[in-house]
Length: 101
Image (cartoon, rainbow, N blue to C red):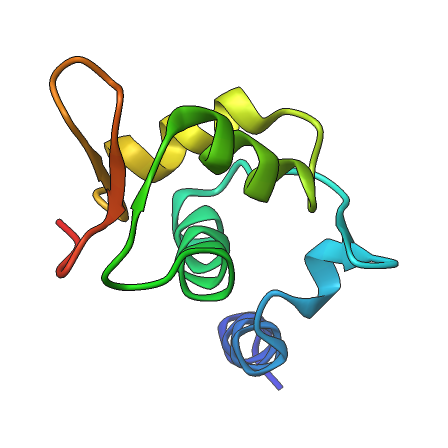
């Protein structure tokens, strides 16, 4: 089997597993460095932690993110910059985005 075929099979297996291998005991082990893998994680967090038609305060967003990882600030920033969450200009209100960038 060629190396590229093996790499593709490994990527397919990882994709099928979803983000489960990023967690241990319900806690996020680490935020992935690779953008595509991090995007999978952010999509998962958005769908599991935030209701589609609800407004959240920053402390509510932080509390939700802290259920999976202590660095809620980094996760919140990633969710905003990736377009999964939107926030008001003053940062007082957050919402799950209807579409991502």
